[in-house]
Length: 277
Ligand SMILES: [Zn+2]
Ligand SMILES: [Zn+2]
Image (cartoon, rainbow, N blue to C red; front, top):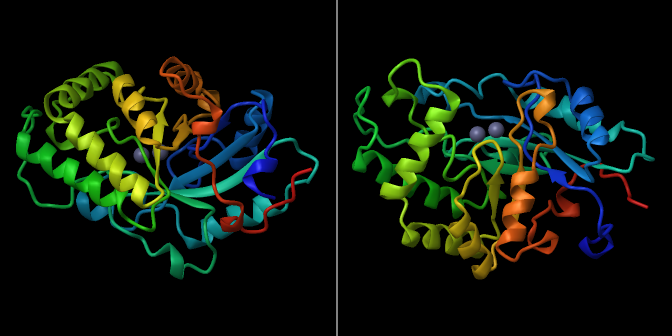
């Protein structure tokens, strides 16, 4: 199959979902069932695969390993061929390469997300707007954008690594508000341009991250003008959130984009891919 044979006008896609193989709740079967119920044309399970996360104090990402990945790929390859949905098995890694090329089985694609900053910058609780720290974060995203192992940059302006600076007791929405403030203060248009340029050179997609509604709309518009391909992801950790991707489609449409601006995994990178009628 080549990209031109993909069915036009088919349902939405969700290319970022976690299962109980890492820190999500649903099983792969439950994800697939919900994806079909929501009429998705493509769905991707992308569990955390990051052997370095614990060292940097990042909580998630430690439980998924080569064996779980092999099991997921086997599960996918065993699915009945008549389903009107394409199923991909990706991984979500952190800022450090995990050496996917040397794994016994290859994931269909790799999301690279900066869940932590690798340069040692002292942080303090309650001191969130630290320019040095956020500069280091921005450099980290730039490195991920140029990393040949990475296919998609995950939540470049959302789910920011601020856990060590947070005071206890913040709500989900308060944390999103803090992210918008960090974005406004530090994430300049020039930085977005640099990331997009690196992504274009490396054929890396930028994620439209529906859990945090990021990147902000003017930067989606900038990326679109520069020729960026976008990947749509709910980042669902429970079954109800699977396919909650309306924000990405609405945002893309409102800046003049459409399905042709969306990234999808190359067929030749897929292991045991089923032919699509
Ligand atoms: Zn993530
Ligand atoms: Zn995720």
